[in-house]
Image 1 (tube, rainbow, N blue to C red):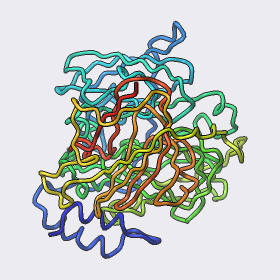
Image 2 (cartoon, helix red, strand yellow):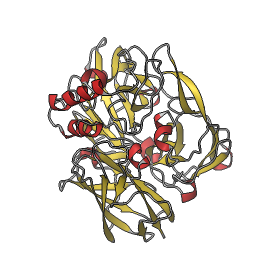
Image 3 (cartoon, rainbow, N blue to C red):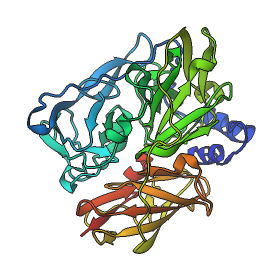
Length: 483
């Protein structure tokens, strides 16, 4: 039987110039034609300008901290041109507004829950006390308020915030509850990188829209979500000048992996990942983004004449190239001066301390056929809020080996509280794109990664999980206690 998981696995396992092969697409098309369910709407390519989420204005900057207010509420927006779609939002924005913060300066956010379900707001990638982490079971009820304080005692990093209420997180994030939190510091600010209007956050994701333009949510719906969105719009265009731009890419999808390239095969300069700048820039012809991963990139449009239209492509299914092969288009419309540059050295990471322990973790779906009874397992167990799975001594520096033994289903791995270093992927040194600090790492079927993490900040209980949120909602999550 052809299933969603088998097609997804086939698409991810394919290698080569294009990952859309007949082997992956034939069962996909058969499955789509055979499935009963909602007919989906199509979106025109490059008919809408790329919006940039607004930067949230603080209510107060007194007392050496920035204070904000956000309301979780339903709103309506145009995803498809001319059609109003109901979404879940922070302050009515889809995606949520961007918060800009600085290392050493605390941020306080007052959240009001105007939804019908409990919520928990997690600042992904942040080092925060356990009471401010937005743990899956630490929720606040409909009609209630909750205040989170972020000390920002960590280096610069492109963080993001999203709902994390267990059993609701998958649908809440899918319907819109996420936004960027850009933390900067003196190290980053001292570099002559593109800035201001030439520094643009772009949240990528997929969606399934019915004929009336409504977001359709179905658990583990890897095949149905074949409309790609950038900052909430399908296949937008962005008018750019013939100069360098910095793009903060975030994969805010629940399940979709992206493999991105420029249509002309031109170079992409990656300067950062989840935990901030890389030690040195990496010149790539393509890049991976699994759900929740970030890539900080620079594209130099000065090599193109004015009038050029350049497409950012996705070479990874599931979905046909016509559905998911194009992400957005850059239109070079003018010349501009460009004082920016990408230095050969971006930052210096501290040497890795000696490991004090080693641990192994296995992320596995109990059933790869897409059965509704499938469970997400870490080391053979589903998430239990009353169980501590890993006990860690405060100050310890550990090596974690994380494996995906599934043959068809991809995963990734997100660790709360700390940024880690990737030591090895499948027994080989990681490539330059994984040379910096990370909090989320991809695990294609059969892959193994070795990570080095140091637990010397806060004590308390935190979770680690697969950040394919449908998988974590199905139980692929566990708890660690640092004491």
